[in-house]
Length: 581
Image (cartoon, rainbow, N blue to C red; front, side, top):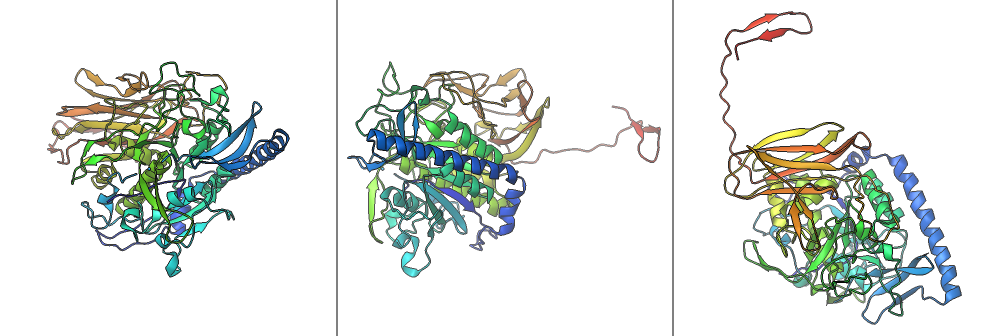
């Protein structure tokens, strides 16, 4: 079955299940409060006001300059993209644009659905996705149960303007399958729609209220209405104030993950002064160069067998490549966004097929929504954003160059495999949410299952870095640099790091807030060590450790009585005990 995906979304919600039965319950106020409890709500409110004021001032200045210079403020291009003026930088108008070119297919998310091979019945019951886009979906569309009065799509910010792009994205997430080919990733979930103006302020508010995931299928337009490159050169691949602002939101709301479309400039090598052409640098701009979010590339329909194993997949040539200027792995992951069939806004029965990273991103967002649902159903809690992101990257199917690259990121999302790791937690997999303090070393030993590769990864939501205006600055923007090593005997296995757009090496990584170590042909016992460089800003760093390819067989422990036992210094509060080793 082909599933469709599109625009910008934020996810809240949960599911509590008994065994594999569909005994479900929406996210309660208590669950939302549990998420909020760990947040500094006062700081988040200050951030919200700052973002709101900045956006208003920038927009008003831009509108004044547009009137003076004859710039369009909101228009649709011949290829169907919507552009809206947001701000002016270095005298140039900066527009948001929708990321659709032509679009998609499911990434084995159907294996989690009712009737899927995993027997999980995960349909997004009780979950809510919040969607930011260039407009709104149609609340009464038949795919959102509008005809029956049970509208699962609502408006979050008073916006009234509909747009086909927003409708397509929302449908990719929540369409119930009245038209089977339009069935969304989470077909029983709800969605709340917002337009993209004041997105940072609104997202801060939603995160403060317990939002788990947001999807953003838009970004900066590379060219203006006349086809001229309009972005400042340092925007391409650079960590700018926009990138930092979103990292600041996510750091202060660590259960919140922002999912972002990479963009559709893969075939355009002029704007970035790329001397080589082809794959690589400076195709990503704005929030797609943040550290803590999940940036999604667009693949063609994948060749997948009946069991959900990837046979082959190709990138859509329009998908924007990375990496960032400091050689972080961006995009992070790939979804399917080619030829996606989903809802439109023109009527209650309108549909269409389009292509782009705008479609691949909600493909991923809706899938991650089900993974949060599954974790809450299985382990009675939602994952931290770093855990959810780390799980997606840990279990992705490698595509393109061997290992991570700046075209596919870590590969094609494998929702089935990610769900299985959640199910096997504590037996054949480890998913641990930990904290490393300054000067601390964390060490555990694991036993390989002797069959699958041993994979260990760490993921963390890093503090916002320092925004810069230097063109092609290679200075790392990582603040707290954690390190992962997997050792056995005298052999130490290192994580991946990019050496080019399509090349990587296994070596010390000082740029990415995600590290993965792969040990092929693993057997026996391995030691996993997590350390850090320098001193940790803030004195500590939360992180998530995921390990797969380990045995589920308990280690036999034979207890023996020691000999030569003696005690001394016995008091009410302590004693010294000696025995023969």
